[in-house]
Length: 107
Image (tube, rainbow, N blue to C red; front, top):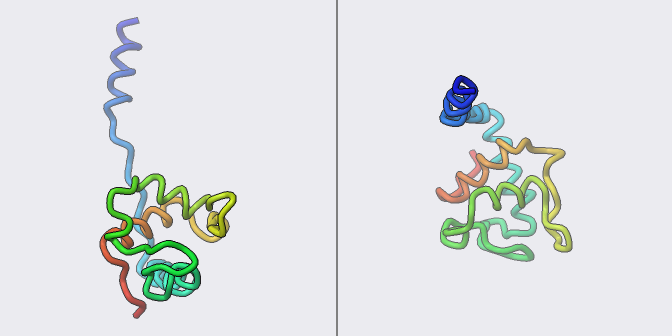
């Protein structure tokens, strides 16, 4: 019994490995996707349009996991579609991190 409890403590305390970053080529594709596809609703400068602003100021204080879930799964009952067919959850998280830092321009 003690061994099981000790093993449980070791497993619980073990950090989960981080998702690998998208490759440089995939990052360029994701920047293009956000600037063009997301920009068609959120504004080409991501400052808002049909959809809300995606600037760091507008997203400040919003839970990262919630933003990732919105990108990956969409928002039922709104025009926000799910992007899970085109993006992994890790890629959606990368996009959120970039949005919070000030999204890069296309190169």
